[in-house]
Image (cartoon, rainbow, N blue to C red):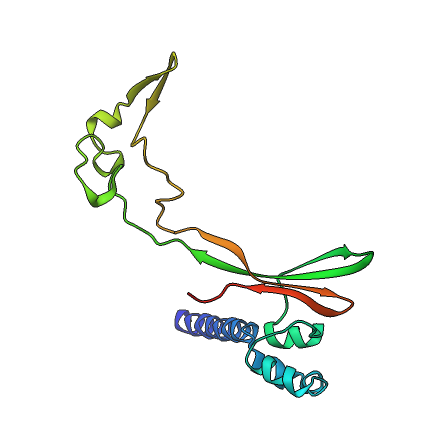
Length: 181
């Protein structure tokens, strides 16, 4: 009986894992997958725009459909006004993860740290150390240089606008993207 329940659970877990993986892979869209999924949109483009879209590039004067085929759906849309006419700006968010550096005290592993061994394990730190400044007393428990957000085991992922395109009368009037180094 227990063996049968384990097999049923394993089969359900496997099915769920396959479904989740398929959903994840389906969300990874490229210009080629968008073109093959929407050949009707691609055929309406000029040969010049078809060549650019196939390479994931855009130009001034392109339509919204061409930009969508090249860059995909934006993460954010902003509406605005230019010269009394409506504009729309698409923003594509990228993420950068700051590198993680192991932390072993106020100066990391780069030098001696007699007062704050491993940030909070020495006896002097465990009882707290007082600091006087401007007529006030501050007591530190642990290293005064320790920042739990920065030195956590999970480095922060910071969003930034990697691509921005603005449309006026349905056509690209400006765009920006982060160039490779």
